[in-house]
Length: 276
Image (cartoon, rainbow, N blue to C red; front, side, top):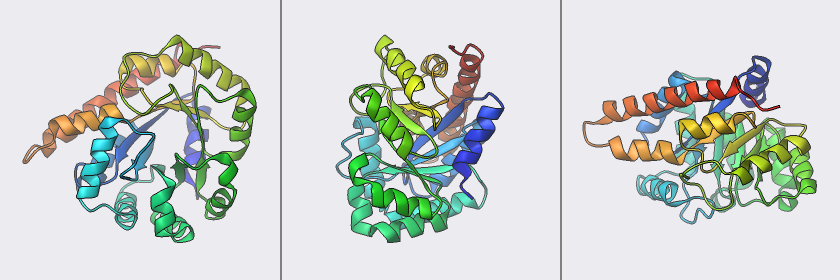
């Protein structure tokens, strides 16, 4: 059973927007990752994105780059990430999407990786640097193991390309709100709104979730009017970084929980004022 389309169908049926939270696997420690996921779900997250740390993360800004390096220093590997997912599955059925880059997957072995992910309980994959034209075999193998393969679209993506990505993706289409890397932005721009309205026009097969630069309750409230959900990462990593320390885990987990509760409230507010 793939939990991702089931969750999205449930949310759409109940006229709720999806709140997806990104956290780097193994950050700030391997042992704390399942606890953080537990708090995220308890506070109102619908989907968990687990980042696969990589030394050359071209789509990620400095906040997630640093988290990735810390996680790598902690000894995180694909094998350990699958163990983290299995640990999460002991207490949760929340949909889990792994997001990373093709190099670590290729080095691990594509089929071996997909088998390990499926057996651990992964529901979806985002491979940021695997283009549509090169993804056929990977996408088919993932589908055969009941794992969604999620593509990214950007403001520079053409109308024709949006249709092609929509036809190839499953679970949801990951719409990047701005050009550039992940990271906290000051606000949602008029260009982003125009782009999302265009996505709604051309993406018909999948829900639209928006990520990159979504960091505050105001962002979530604004974006949710134009999409089926949001993805928040860098601001969560910042909260973890600022509150993590020896003997401080309870404080960090409480701050994580409070942040997600506020996002959930803002998301619900935005959904009640959805654009036509």
